[in-house]
Length: 113
Length: 114
Image (tube, rainbow over all chains, first blue to last red; front, side, top):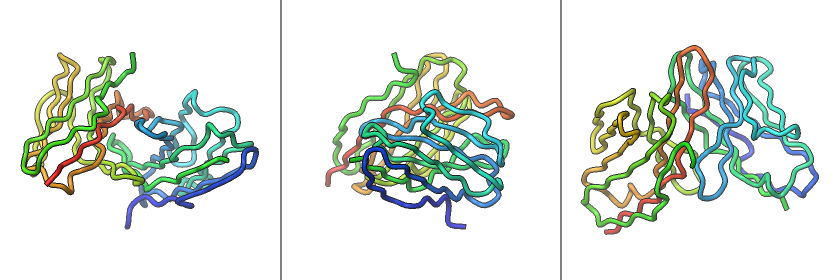
């Protein structure tokens, strides 16, 4: 196992377009998290999945954002009608049950023009 | 006031020096504390994890937690140029059965010069 993977690594889009990112967690990690990180800031929590169930959503996750984890394995994060303020690094992390440590992927860097 | 405060630096030290990185926090419910290292344009890499108060050592790294002061530290001994990165503190009140994202500091940009 090579850790958490994310695709694409970079995405440039025009304002108003929809984008979708994918995260593949470490195998057998049932917990999956999405974060957003802007320049000069630490990651900010967006949402959490336990298997396929989305159990927690931050107030940062506006209606334009939706996340899924349909079979409890990989997850997708979709942003609709992107805005320039959505430009950031989107990070995915996973952890095993009953462990608080989270392991991060390399991130997807989004630039909205 | 943010929940977690961390000086963004940059902190520049000579190779071989002992580095001290710190965070303060305001939420007394936090009980799990982590340090991550992040190289430019990469994802955070877990370095150290501690539970509640006390010290933990792993090679050149020592993590220290003082819950009474709401203060955590990371010490790096015999610092190397390859240690140059941004160091993020993170914490959670995670209770074992619930869902908690990590709360991060801004990160301290560390530069080790030869």
